[in-house]
Length: 316
Image (cartoon, rainbow, N blue to C red; front, side, top):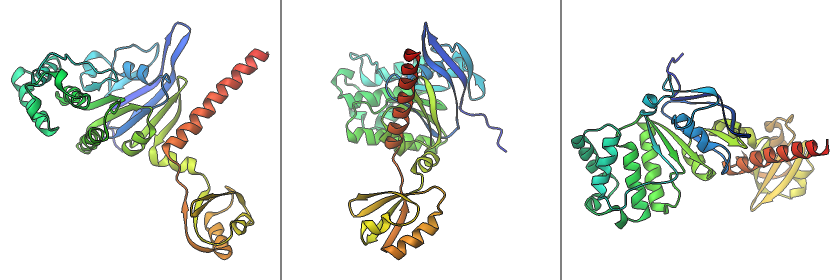
């Protein structure tokens, strides 16, 4: 059994601002060498959680460890942080700015210049090295900010809405870099409310809503959990023949296929054999829901629970 500690461990962490609870007893572990998504709608508590991991904000309750050590300023130096709000000095030249960012992260000037030049070549910005930051497009500026985040070669990267405002080409380039870094053994934490990005990139996720952790696990396990006993049938026959089969709860036509929900107590294999008798069946595949569908389902449900509880309190 591995004794390697989690890259980040968040244990029963709570943060309050007066009467408002921004984060309510949240716990999750980020495995090393993975892309971990901290997901949720705007205002859910994601950024507060990240700020506590970075030791910018101190939890009121619970504890956080980084690579097995308490989350202190020293431990936080193992992290490269790309905040949602970008901040570059527009009048500085590009390479000069990257060297400056490297120096404040502990590199000597020569090493920062060497790595900065290597990164500029890697992201196709070498020809812009002596240009002022204000001359770059927004996508180019975000590449410069990203170089500043990784130039000190941190073990962990925390990326808060890293694709915000990027065109598809630059977004694709960043995604490729993230996957490459994960494959090299780095740990990346992706903080976003865009489920399509998380589904394509993340190995595991923690979904936060209304200050609470409402869902956690690998992307594959979560999708299987929410797919339930639904199948996609392709073949030739009348929809009514499938509806008439024992154990069928619902049938919906999806273009050239049928989406069928069956009773959870009914074995899939038994149902497929019955469907093949009722239809000229070409294929039967499990229905896989998207992370976006799961997000809407879980977030909508938890909002409904809060509204119901609030209504009950008012009635009492």
